[in-house]
Image 1 (cartoon, rainbow, N blue to C red):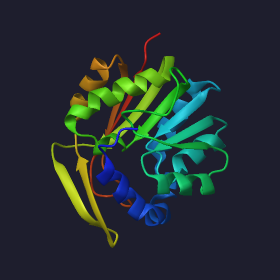
Image 2 (cartoon, rainbow, N blue to C red; image 1 turned 60 degrees about the vertical axis):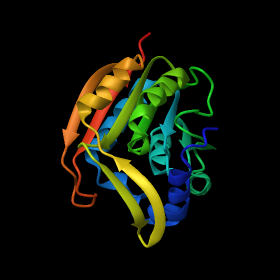
Image 3 (cartoon, rainbow, N blue to C red; image 1 turned 120 degrees about the vertical axis):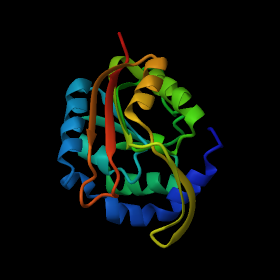
Length: 211
């Protein structure tokens, strides 16, 4: 287990229950996200999908409802506890993006929705190398992130004391790290934030581990 993300782990442990209540139903109004996740399910073709940075498991649960086998991984033990309670159709593991608790080539596809935003710039490439390791050849990865070029630190979140940084990144920067890690980027999408979301622009990349 990588131990360098204690601030992030502790912050998400602190807000886990509130996060579930506020964010757990977000896919109901995220039409674009559902469409992209549908692509991932189709690409997985019955194989297991990894939800990396799964939080309280709502995305993993949606994937499971579409018939996919799902393994969610999150840094926060409290998030994993809630995910296991809320989404019994999926499997959940505690783990770090830099040292995933999974075998080589275990997954047919993976999603990392807003989980890479907590990685330092120098951690982005090794994280994608690690994701490539756990994907089978031909497997796809969907990554989403906040667009920009800044770091926002939060010390209070929904009334809880936290200490966590949010790294905003450009699509080209994330695509370049994916390419360095051995992925072929196949699709890019950017959109404005929805009224129900934090007011940030969003970026999505769909990449494939070559055969």
